[in-house]
Length: 343
Image 1 (cartoon, one colour):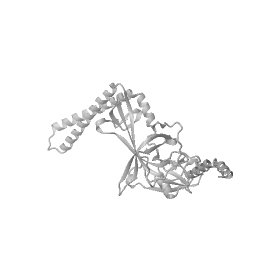
Image 2 (cartoon, one colour):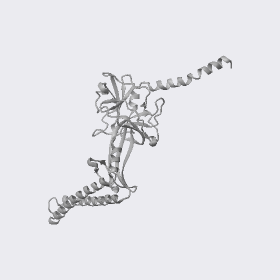
Image 3 (tube, rainbow, N blue to C red):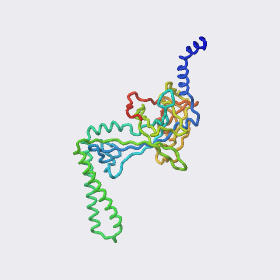
Image 4 (cartoon, helix red, strand yellow):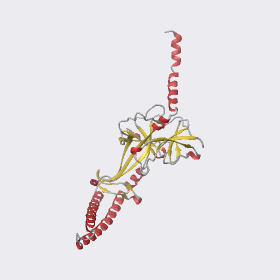
């Protein structure tokens, strides 16, 4: 090889990383086609509930932390889990700013963003909260006992020939069963009070919902990544780290961020009706809805067509942000994210 050729090669070497960086940056700025916009959106089922654990063993389950730190819809452990299930729209996201790095990551609005702080508050006053719940269950038990006594009196003074006797007898059986369950619940709560270590824990599961064959849908289990984002968003990740073949991921951690000016045309990939009463996952379909940007980052697209979590694009298909409560939000990863949970 001649000296001139060697010199040219050596001089061009520093340009190679620059060229690679340029093309990687350019790839993050490519606009999405209609199919690409549709492919960014997906449906995620979030299910959560709580348990009271005594010395590491679950004792009871309850659905929500209510007013005055009360335990809503509390059940003994062997009576099933009391849970809340919420369907939310999400979008496939790349974790790294300059290269495809989705690996099954989905950005979703956290359906219960105050849960962690509420758990900390309850656990700081755990004995007080359990004692208050025990007293509440004692009041319920007294009402059940009074009602059971009334029904016993009725059944003892009437015969099967009387109108409504069978209905009252069935009601009496149900009241007795509820009374016994309340008695068991009180005994369990009192045992939890006597334990060396008692705490409540939040239990959350996530499932990716995708259309299946016919009218069925398929569920793919997802895990929390531990990543927290601004505006109440989190990411979850499919257990197998795979994405459907028609999925398209956005760059959420962008180097260059685009914004819409007032009155600009915008589009959103929305799963119509997500989270509303009567919404059926089997009929879930992603639609491209159009509208305009307004002042303070707002848009005029209806929430029914553009649920929270919908990705928003410019009229040319460039990603702008995520829709939440009628605004186009520039969602960013929080710097203090706990990465210890990342899968």
